[in-house]
Image (cartoon, rainbow, N blue to C red; front, side, top):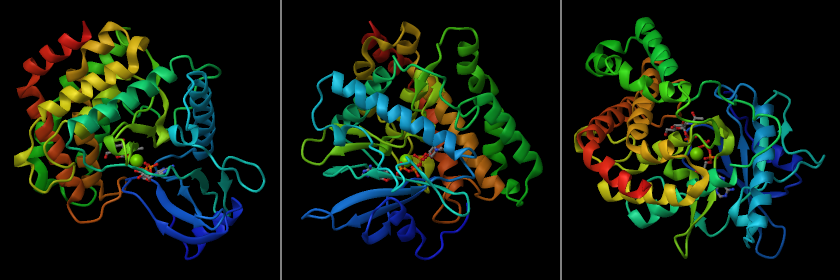
Length: 369
Ligand code: ADP
Ligand code: GN1
Ligand code: MG
């Protein structure tokens, strides 16, 4: 990513017709540069989310924006049909540039966009209350249902093979072999364990190839912080971070909820020894997701939640440890060793999910029928 020049976000805000009174960094996302823009329009002032798309991660940001524009319009249309009120808080709304475009390309070729800020709601980095987890999962399940009748040309793959876990294993093996910044010696144990998980890593893709799991339009980044919960009611009102909405497997959307929510410690906890499955959280997530998706899913997609959770968590471990070995080039880090800590919690969570597998599967079977 290119560095942000002083005053640049302010200048870009003007391209969207925003006369900013303040612009500051915002949110805890790992990928894009996100700013909160305040303007004086209206008596109480207004807020906007300005984002620069990370073009190292998303190499075709214009295609990404084409997807986001189509998806937000489709979801809005479906919500109108369902008679949902309060539309501007229920779906992300792109705010156009002064030229009437959905995004702005700056002199460096970087792509920027503005969403209306969704007020009176919060995205939580950590959720420990099963009632909130249920709400978040309900929203992502509902999102899946709203996209079930998405028509027109296939969406662009904004990151090709994003959840192709065997490819993640190959990429991981390559960075292990290269050891570009000399960090391998310190993580041999984790690397050896991960390289021994190829069978599990390939299981979901195998089911997709065999036709057991259908291709759908999925969110693909359903971690709990990518949904806004209403501050007053706790209800999940708006799904965020639509950059990876593209063809995928519905199970992965449940799986990333499980990975990010059904755990007893934060993703980057420095001590992975406390990691376990938070069973009430898992149950709330499974209930919420299946209820939200309703009839949009086939039996296999409702039954394999636990396996999917294991595979997604494993995939994330390859990705985090791979990025640690690469020298922290993908995920934003705020301290040394953060990607390694993230990888260790994921490894511990895969192992914990495996320990709890039987009872979690029983719970899911009870829901699926
Ligand atoms: P990243 O891809 O870097 O994770 P996100 O699109 O998830 O970026 O945005 C980062 C954070 O900004 C979110 O977790 C949320 O807190 C906040 N955010 C994003 N869009 C909005 C919005 N329209 N209204 C309010 N907050 C938002
Ligand atoms: C990234 O964008 P954000 O922070 O919501 C990543 C996800 C990972 C997640 C791990 C485009 O999500 O795939 O699961 O970090 N997004 C992308 O926290 O790579
Ligand atoms: Mg995010």
